[in-house]
Amino acid sequence: MDNKSYLVQMNGNGVHVHGNGIHHVSVNGSLYPAKAKSRRQRWEVKPSEMSNNTLNPIRAIVDGMKLTPNPDKPMIALSIGDPTVFGNLPTDDAVLQAMKDAIDSQKYNGYAPSVGYLKSRQVVANFFSCPEASLEAEDVILTSGCSQAIDLAISVLCNPGDNILVPCPGFSLYKTLAVSMGIKVKLYNLLPEKSWEVDLQHMESLIDERTSCLIVTNPSNPCGSVFSKEHLQKILKVASKHCVPILADEIYSDMVFPGCSCPSMASLSSDVPILSCGGLAKRWLVPGWRMGWILIHDRNDIFGYDIRQGLVKLSQRILGACSIVQGALESILNNTPQCFYNNTISFLKSNSEICFNELSTVPGLNPVMPSGAMYLMVGIDMDHFPDFKNDVDFTEQLVTEQSVFCLPASAFEYPNFFRIVVTVPEEMMVEACGRIREFCQCHYRPRSRDSNDLDQ
Image 1 (cartoon, helix red, strand yellow):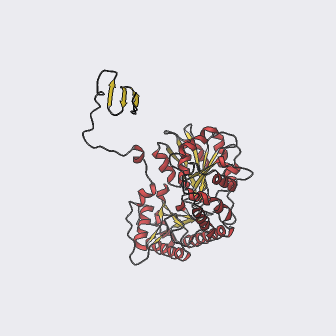
Image 2: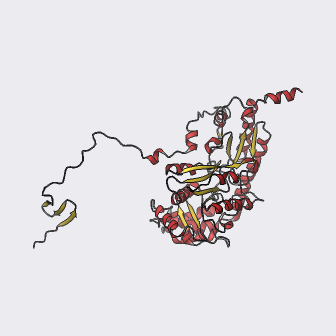
Image 3: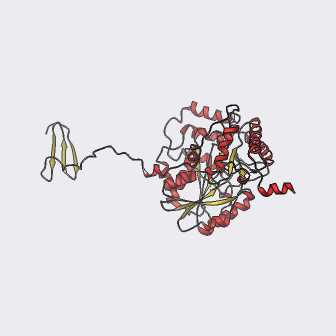
């Protein structure tokens, strides 16, 4: 036999032998395969249903606003939940040095496992472990920011046609992700008169046999609220009664003002399985580094192997979190000085108090004092502002007249409020509050009965 190379392929049409000459042998006796289906006659490339169903409520509202700032006043944006925008809240030098060391080591330039380096996962497990809710490396999935952690958690717990319970007002990404996957969103009310506690009765009334996940955000975006231990236990009691797992969005964990405590949900749970989502973005002031995690709390093995393996499989859709940040995690978590956290919290509390105190005396506005995170919600008594149709119209005109941009709470499906981000420099916060006051004084109208009271 000669030394020629041959490639033999078996398929349904027969045997194909490839050598110096190519021979086609078909079992049906034809030299060529059956004629393929007619090609398309014209280009027709359509977006997928998933892309069509993906909508960010914030972008949908903001992109439709006519934002033309007053040219005589510099713009003050109180709308962006990024603490780095104004440069007044840099991360700590120890955090930067950890990244520099990771880069210089050249150990983290390649692909990491999709769930993260084992050593880095163990570091996160050690950092967040507590006697009431211990963690090992196998309980940690590293992700590309907290947003991917939320995406994986929803994806692993829910099927199309299921429903999830989401706080209202609440972070808009939950709905964006769920609806794109064919998952129904049910909004449970938060109560501004009770510092944004959950309306437990309303929440429980929404649960049915297709409820696959309860999302709890604590501390809260957009409210800045922090739930007490007792309130968290009441939420857990509802979840336990109806056997609904919890997705705990705890990206703002430990960003709470002095005098408040913020235990993790997992530390209070005796039986409810919890996927806790967090990351470096807020507490360490590095949202662009895209490092997040899922902490799997499942002391009764309710999630079991399948949910854990599901998270692993879903993490393989992309190649995981940034490897260099993973290499820096041990130093970031263990070497960041406590004074850095304290200084950040002190600044946020001070700015929140300035904002709350200034706006509390503005007729027609009802701010709710936060207890943590980076936000403050302000109610608008729209009856006193007949010039405006709604909170979107109100905030749009605020930009036009005063060059102050606050996010209308319709973006969080909670009309007649607006959200203020309190990370701006103090002098900018004072200036913004003064402009908001001037705007409201210009447009405020007393109710007819108020006018009658004044005449008496």
